[in-house]
Image 1 (cartoon, rainbow, N blue to C red):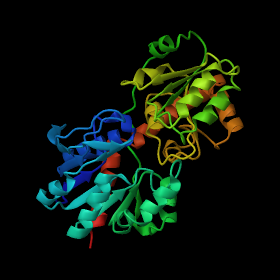
Image 2: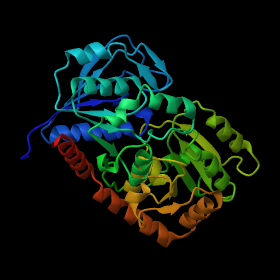
Image 3: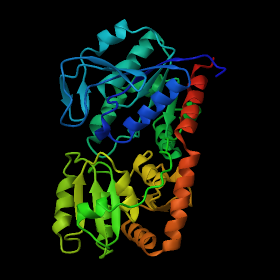
Image 4: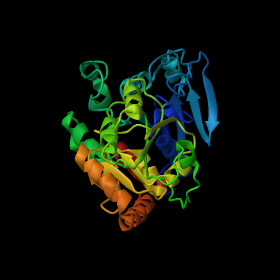
Length: 384
């Protein structure tokens, strides 16, 4: 590497192995380990939270995680997914000045305080909002008030804003950030995997030959699960497997109601969180991400890399990276979604094209390519 090595600090609300926080955690893991492999000094400061129920602790722990030093701050309290870390100001006061900080998250204690520390110390930082810049779904008025007051410095004083898609870039620009400071990076796709079905998902569902539609992600509002359940009612021979943790917002009640409703009884299966989803992708006939708003949608990238035909709504940023051969992209609408799922289930030639296109997208958007793009954003943020 001809450019000088950078001293980088990642500040984020959760880090590996906190996989219950969704796609941002494995993406951060790929970025930090990839940047370290390119010769940079990378350090992470985060909370001790593992999921919505576990992780509160009164002890700070520092560990080396895959070659990256990570400080899991004492987190004696939490508000849902947000950890409260009273020791953070003292930790920052003792930390040497980095070349650049990556503020990875929004509206949480760690990223809000670290951004303020950067402003006070005149340390350049890159802000990545993780799809949360636009207030939506819950407590929208409270979020807008928070953004105008407590967090008003976070985007305004950032040297650059990293987003994962043009879809997200439009929201950030609409929120007042100049387009010249917004940089689209994308997220890394997993390495394409040739995985043969082993029947594990069919055994979990108790299904032999019926088509299986797979959803992976949090069971939460905004994920389009209601729309997917409505579409399933129009495909009477298919079963739907929902894999992911309950976000506690009441969506699981809707899922359970659908599992006994006349049109979908016995065909809706909530499996909870699963550690290894790769065999599930291989067993599924089609993967669907029906979100009403998703800055990226890493699970669709995982499915594509595994060779599973993908259907996504046009409100998911990952659609830009899959391309026309890597997924069926449809409006956020019941009839269109049901028709696309049925096409993917009925047309073997189409499924073959989607499998090949998904794997090709995974080759294009490899971890190495995305890490190199992030390093380029850092260099531009540090330029005079």
